Image 1: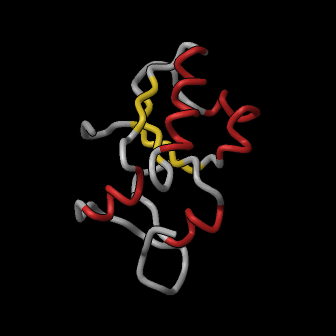
Image 2: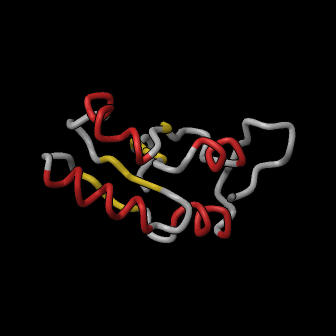
Length: 97
């Protein structure tokens, strides 16, 4: 993923709170349809979920709507396995829920 890329996390609230990328923007998949106007169209959007399945569906939908949407293959599981930075919204160390 390029530096400064727009990273969109489409997981549920509890998954996000457990651990997410520090620069990610959170819009749960179930809310994405009504919140698409919050997502920029002037640059690539990298979508991520737990394993890459939900984000692949979201990326395909967004691509049909004119976004340059790229699925982060392997999702947050691959992100964490690669040792990439994560933060948590809880008192516990970040993890992939």
